[in-house]
Length: 352
Image: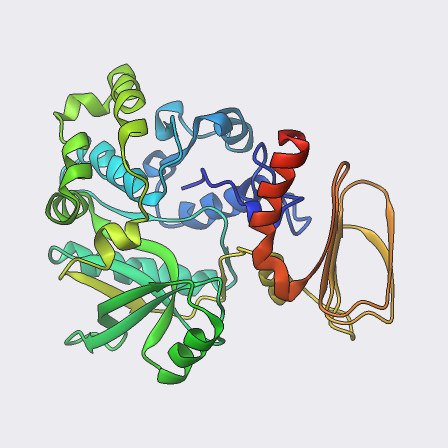
């Protein structure tokens, strides 16, 4: 899934170039390219499918020139993750009704890739044995308010790290996040899911019948030009809903596999600061020439050849691009999405 707008990484991430298409680490690879490379080791390239907003079609083709055009599904409207997952399930089932697949966000960082491969192998084995929906959950190491949480309950027989899902909580406040972490019952939700295509379709039929009925057509509608015409008509009429609340939090057959993968969803500047190399004062500089005086635990990023000089800041974001500059306390970064809306209203789309 690579159609998100990524507004919390403004001003680097823009509507025309969201974070999944950015090389944050100076490695020559964007987050999208890193994600595809990560799954190529387990999934043949001919089985890799991308779903993105149609405005990013050229960017996806440019960054992944080897991917077949028929494997790039273009959303005519943004409708969150539930419709995207349901469309993917029908698209895959039309080619192989017994297929299983993994759903991956394209903007995550996974440092322990061998453990990631093993988790996917075990996950596929688990969902292929029965009608099951499986999430990957990460140990909740801190009360992060930017993450979704999964509450686990009964452990599965013969599986030390697979549990039934009791509930899913989306981005709790600080006090509640602290309670979650202290309880030991909650995992961070990675937004990575494994399932059979037919299990996904069945879950939507049961729990979100209005949405499911829109996509319930013969398999030939999920091929070639017929698919594009059908999706262009039905997709904008579909409600916007995250897949967590559409099926994972409702289904009786939803489970979570606990795995420590060195994971970050890279959702915010603070998340980038947390996983980046730091100097002795805890400062991070991203691909820029900078001088920091009396600064501590800051992240400084800039585009171009400009020299950035910062003095006397603690726990701040300084992010500079050709036409926008952000100076913001890290603790206030959840306001960035609202800031982007304010900029759009006052100064127009040029800066967002």
